[in-house]
Figure 1 (spheres, rainbow, N blue to C red):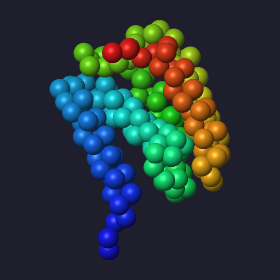
Figure 2: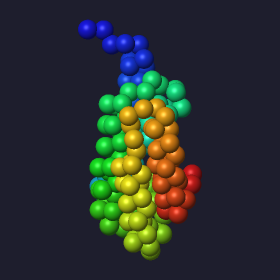
Figure 3: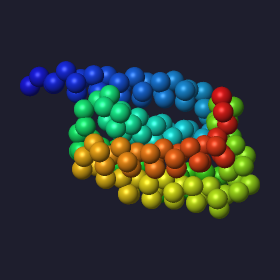
Figure 4: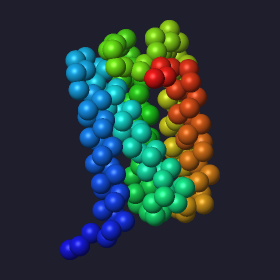
Length: 149
């Protein structure tokens, strides 16, 4: 069975993304930080897939979009637990403000979950509308709780 060219390009892009994330995680010793970084990498992969479909950079595929949406929902449910312990590492982008204002951080994670749950992946048009809300939820949290590098 031959893989269609567009799907093989998507597969290569995902492989590069995963390899880049793996390199960024090298040297991280704290398992809590490592788990958070992996979760954020998974969020990035899912949002990149959804964003690329919404922009027409890759073909719209409802099953792939649903998988990415479901990944965002699952990770958003895990986020508060991943950040309960104030663990740090030199490559971590987590601001101390997370632990200073943990209840708000939990609200931000819930906003991502809600945006992802509301994401309609039945068409590229509905996907475009929902992707904006997902991006806004990510941006709101990053503005408050992520170190800019």
